[in-house]
Image (cartoon, rainbow, N blue to C red):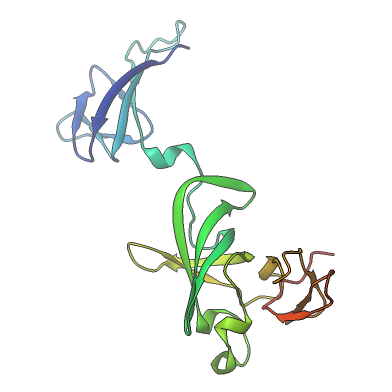
Length: 197
């Protein structure tokens, strides 16, 4: 089945054709009241010819947005992030993977002080939980605002999974709250993720 690619950008609500002429595929929908097919997202329009043995000779019209080419974080997703900035009440991070799939565009996450751990929330010190460059396993709580997802590490299996020491070595977890540099033996504080056994 060949796909005819048309580099035509469309936006939600844009008319793609009549239901009598085309079928609505992904990213499109048919309005029954006027038999018109509309785009449901911003992206590129593609027309896919019907299979040769299909009794329905209408081509299918699809709209593939740029987000269709990679995973998108959703509430409840487990993500792998790289911490970029640590502040007094939150840490910012770039989302690198959703589940086991790497993202293809930039998504930003925020771990707020109250979402670091489940207990003694008021005693959480962000600077003793995360450092810039740390690789963290987190849970997506919600799309916080237009710029960032709210993330949580308030489960035993969530938290820092990989971190470099000041000496530049990959540290080894020694407790829930500490990681050790194998070169210098120095202990650094972190919110450590429990390794899967």
